[in-house]
Length: 177
Image (cartoon, rainbow, N blue to C red; front, side, top):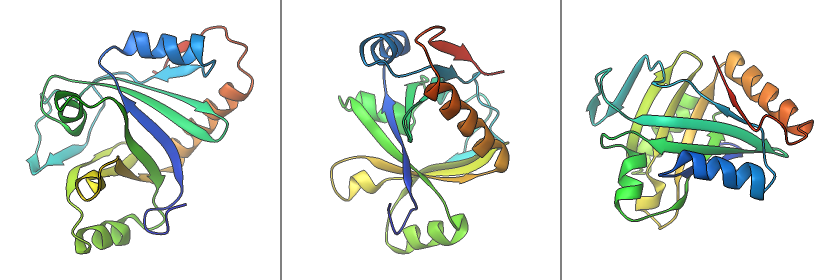
């Protein structure tokens, strides 16, 4: 657990080919089932140095699964600049960020800013607030995603975890509506 950002529960990978990544994780590694989010995601707002418009193409695909207590997230970025697209365009591959559960989102964001940690992007969905903290700029590695979860998000993640615990390998990729 990070004493600054809360427990790490998610490892997120940014990929260029979502189908190949899903095949690798489900068939080769035996992790699943993955749940695909409908895109575009319904952002209430999102900011990357300035507020982004609804037409901004941040995310092409996002899929979630659990392996034990660790959530695996696979992200295929959209075409517009974003922390995801920047990661791939810099020639990087693999783990992009670690997801954490905020215990006091506003206080943790204030502490991150006071520590000089740049906020790469922040926003709000109907089920959460989130920020990507550019901790990788201070030391090579990954970003931290700080997530302020609603009960609806907690329930969704609990359902995905329960499905993973009983998964028999069938129906490896499922759609969320």
